[in-house]
Length: 239
Image 1 (spheres, helix red, strand yellow):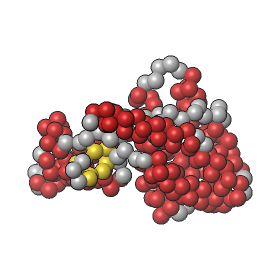
Image 2 (cartoon, one colour):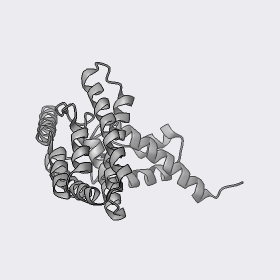
Image 3 (tube, rainbow, N blue to C red):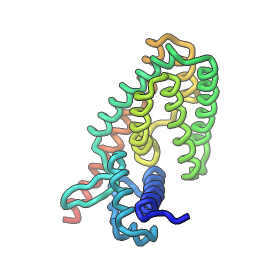
Image 4 (cartoon, rainbow, N blue to C red):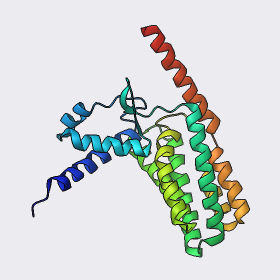
């Protein structure tokens, strides 16, 4: 079977997108890193067009930004932008928690609690282990993203699920160890959330999710503010 040029280009763009997305989320391309289309094309062995399509998609995800006289780079959010993202996440996921508490079936509730226990075990391993394997950390945060999406699925609102899924990409990159040093989580952090959502009223589920999302926010914002200040000092010294 022979594929048309547009089909082949689409496949190459998808491959480039996934490679670059993984590098960003794993911290291999740090926040603010410049992205040269030509250099990426040479490295990945493709033409400029698939790279441009991949970068456009990453920009739509909110992981990449293009600015005049700056070029294309991995997004380097300000503390204010991060706070706004948290506010959006809180609004979306607290509603998902309310709907899960009201609509989810018994099986979904049991699965949520079991997965939350596994999530806590993984996070506790990250806290106690001296071997901070980037691949394991990536797997932990991927599992965490899926846990929150399971709550969205149990809410039985497709539009809300899609909105949370899109927002998760941003939180995934900005919230955790790749970008900021946040305090260690309580040992049963996710189990407590899951039991509140699975067994509580919609109002209790809402409160639990808001508390969960706000945990450590100020530490993240302070970390980003310090990084911004350090970068500004370096730039002034260079000038």
